[in-house]
Image 1: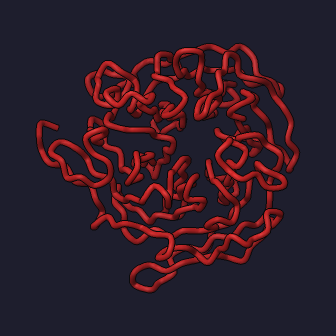
Image 2: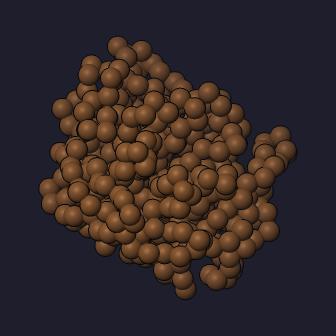
Image 3: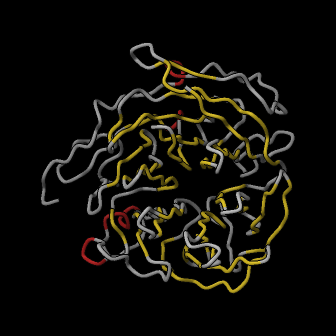
Length: 370
């Protein structure tokens, strides 16, 4: 980057507040509610850009759901952070398929991201990001006949701590596995080229540096605090990142870029650092999982207890974000695009930081319309 001031902003990024952008939800919504009228909000120009509605509850009674991945048969696997168990969801029924070995759960650590091999079932593997005894690891696990077996660690040495473990996995359109990591509660890791902390990794299914990575490293970007959200729009990767006390971020990812932490939090306009395309006060977001659909990045928020919809194109923000379901379902952890085009959205009220409601934690099916 050579000291050049880098600004990827997609228009002026703004401070987003709940009062300005809440999509008509209230604290009084009953915890047992499984359907809702379509919610929408308007852009600065007054035009409705997207509407969301909770169509049904897919599953209940899941303990701290974190990773969520769909199989070619349209069933889904979900990771329970603290128990280390992987569960299968099919036709509304939840069943155990096995447990990931050596998971060490903590405040923010445990069994985190899941991804399904793009060659499945010919390559019958799933991939799990989890906290071990001294580090975070990525393992390849055989999944056949409804059971997990033959767990093999393909990458280890990702900094771990009670907090800031990152953990999201996502296969890209290039067939390589991307992982968002955290700084492991040690800020210098994010700028240390020799550390896997505070980075976005791009690896082969054997855990090696993917071809084309800058300088042949395992990681493609650095300067991140805690990345728990990854999503692709075609070849463009987006990442959601927890801020410290002031700004959470949505970043458009460019290989080789430095996203600034710990020198920068939010839009800082520092030489050699890439600014986010959107930022939020931490009370309005604290973002975890993200997904891309219909021209929007959908961003699940924990402390903010809402689902953000951010219009994007070509790595830029092209309109004002909208907030949905604010305070209606509690903490929201993961959002994924289902095979039918809807969103599956998980709550995270059993993670020790939320108020548990009857049926928590749950997976909601959310429909998208214009």
